[in-house]
Figure (cartoon, rainbow, N blue to C red):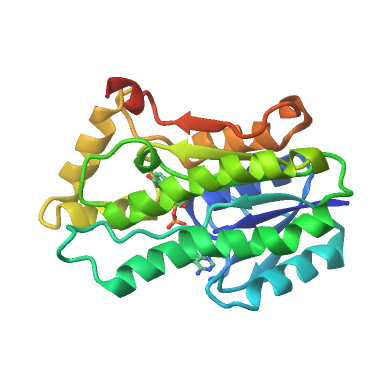
Length: 246
Ligand code: NAI
């Protein structure tokens, strides 16, 4: 079978991507540094777990080998991401490094290992989860925003480079999505009133609510499907209208 590799699979958007792809009876390799656990919806028999730390330079080889052991690596969805929302004076060099290593460099390493394997697949694609921070900013997230802006630029470059090999490359830019990541960002942004911060982020989106992880995962499911076979180099915003307000 064609294998979908999803990073950041244990939580939030990555987990929802695993579930959406598995629901379509696709074979999924769910990659995370922590186990998926049962969650609210059990992952199902066509989901294979791969525990790997993307910061480990050996991880791309391990992940691609695990995908080849169950089929042909075809689809790569990079959801793993971290943030260090903070003022510029508080962002340390190691904050900058951590954010770039997980959000950008790990994707680049994985793509390098994946591309030679995917060229023969039926509808190969790479989908990178960016952020509205790649496009606009409310401040206080310089390292995170820079890493996501770089991810968007990498998407465009790779789409051009890999188009001739039939590999589509797109990025998805979520607004405020209800996941553990959002709450930890809110704790940094407004430690004394986390719920107030989350509410403000929800209200800033014209649809008046937080997105759900499924809202994003369903768009990813479409992007990797044959329905989207002429889409590459696209930056798809899933933000309840947030960027339209700016
Ligand atoms: P989350 O924190 O719920 O899940 C992220 C997953 O990535 C976790 O399971 C974590 O263990 C995994 N991960 C982190 N570092 C790793 C490493 N070194 N190796 C392997 N796995 C690692 O986060 P969420 O909200 O699902 O975010 C997914 C992506 O969406 C991230 O790239 C994030 O930047 C992006 N995003 C999220 C938004 C939100 O409001 N939740 C908004 C915009 C973008």
